[in-house]
Image (cartoon, rainbow, N blue to C red; front, side, top):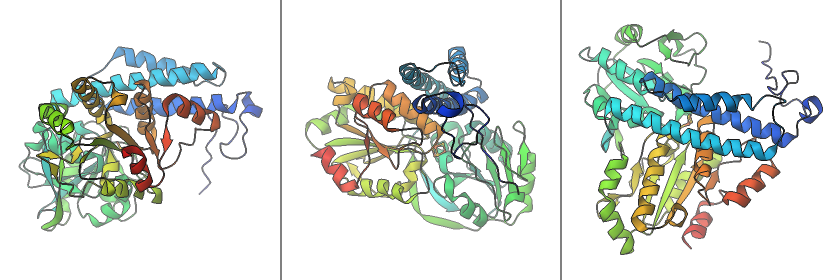
Length: 433
Ligand code: SF3
């Protein structure tokens, strides 16, 4: 097969990563080009969230207008000013906050506000369909169409939080969760004997072993995999019926998901009391997009080493690094609180703002540290959303995004005190003193 060449989208003439100096071809300073790359990542992440909101009938013209302007700003020769592009990234972060609010509203108005829910790992006897991705609309429609058919529906990766939504969890055949973050697909899907439905990005090119029982929907499309336009999942259902039944094979852990803003705020009085009496020393938000690299083992180690008077809030697929750990509780407040998908970062923001109000301080003065896992487009959008709120002192890992050069790192460190993750024990010591 001919090697796939990625052309530089700054000029479309030079292959990226093959010695293009950018400056030599289009006259751009590398920092300008990198900030434009950064903006493209933010736009991609936002577009994915907007897509899922629009699927549920929720749109926002102001965000659409912004996307048009931001994408235009990534033209080769439209703006050469570094400061303008940093400001635009901050504005994009704000727009991504608005986008996540829109998507949360879409999810809650359609499926109800999530409630803490225990999710069984493993399979039950009978035909099954495994759903992966972020698309709750596709999952909801599939659950409707499979009701009463004897088919069980399982979630994978970013679909885990679906179990917390009342209008989704009401389906008894939403049977459990399988696997961990997106990159275990090839192994998990090979072993899973049923049909598979992919609803969003983070899909991998399938292996021969399962591509004939795999389906995509929405913007996702994979080679030699049947694509479904719209929400008629008859072919997925027929495929699941034609395949061998899954075995009764319960896993040995039960996960808990579905902590919404309302649930946490209903505990505000108790949390205040525990913080003031010194029983809760610190909150950590540990989460983000996971990546299959060794350095990501940091996050499990970090959470394991945290003292028992700390609380961990988490979200996105990075939580699968540690969400099987039993951290117990502090007088009834769970020490591990799963807030949902990556787009539910907005719930974490709302909770941080509410806690700041509760204690009469700014968010940066709270006993709260943010330990982010960076991997792809949505994570970049969320990083800039947090920066747009002027949140300081975040730890970022496992490595720096590729668009960050020394100049951009200086801006991030000087203005936002961004730190790179180091060794878990050392970082915890630095944070807790
Ligand atoms: Fe990210 Fe794919 Fe896991 Fe939504 S978007 S979390 S990696």
